[in-house]
Image 1 (cartoon, rainbow, N blue to C red):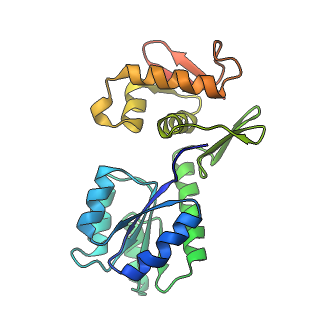
Image 2 (cartoon, rainbow, N blue to C red):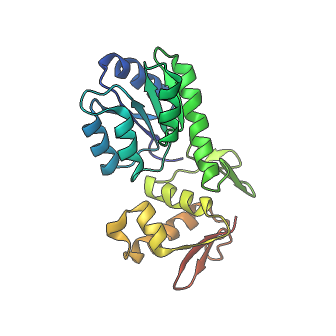
Length: 229
């Protein structure tokens, strides 16, 4: 199982929203990350991309729709807009600007969590991956970030899981060293192929039936790796 919870960045200037939404996200298996201004939210988004964003439109330093536009310039994950604005045009504008969904204040936590799960599933499908991948007795749940064999969790480090997820999402395709390094370690490490060799080796030890003859993660010599599960 992965060593960390999926990160949800909540950008909202109302302390009470963070007070009840933070614990609810934590209880649902997420790691809430708090930002109270658009500037702080965009900075956090650029620093470490979360799995999804909950964005208030009524921010004190920048209109939420402008923040959404700036976020979409470099962030492709799910964004749920949260706002007291109830005009239909506001919802349409936000969705046209790249929001995945729109939740009105006041809202029920159960509804927001359900919409968040749906947005995460849709994003995975848009990327060409199913939410759950299976290879024999191995099961990889890309929503819950859970890897099991015969129903028993396999403990993976964050990097190991992120690498596995990238391979699974590109199932059947050759994933180049550069693609994998950029996605998992960031652009500054795109030439550090030795990272990949080490982590692919660790993954094979944990998920392959016979690590000496890998059947799930195939090496494409000089190019990268391919998930064939």
